[in-house]
Image (cartoon, rainbow over all chains, first blue to last red; front, side, top):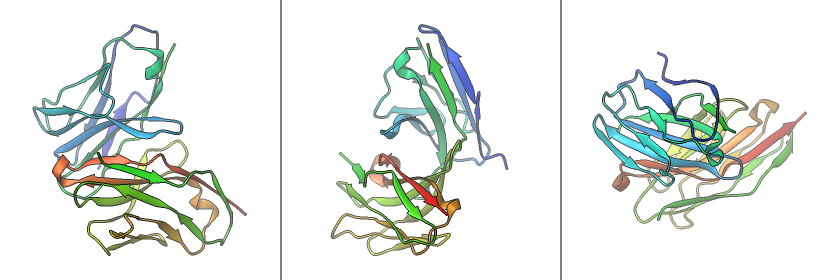
Length: 112
Length: 113
């Protein structure tokens, strides 16, 4: 089992560029989430999904867009990158209930 | 809203020392509680969990007990090893919010030989 796969692992963008961070899971988990990790701030929820076709905003959704057309995939789109979006991004998935998340290995994004 | 507070780090301990990392939470319902660990350069891994009051989660020598009366979920280990050096995150999820997980800020632990 691959678990949760994130691509790319590293990315450098220029201000104003757009890009998509990919996330795929092969565990048939209904729930998927995107977090960003910044020093001293822990993980903050960007967007989450409770199933294909259903998404909602987390704590810090501005500047990001998501869609969930399949159970397996949950891409995160940066519409117009800003230096404040420099961060490490983690995708996670779980079945419904208090099972705990399975995390991907992260994407380190730098916006210059 | 729901929130998680952890003790400030970094924490530095000698090998075989006793570890406690404090965690307290605020929640409107009856959350489930978790500890995650993040080793350098990696994603987070679930370390242990507890889903109701007085439950004790345990794994790899780590333990934490869900204390509803003090809204706490402190992480303990009797004898730490160098390989335990990592960042530890306390977290909660609430079934009334689709099990969204809220994380604390993390506590960095360094264990020296």
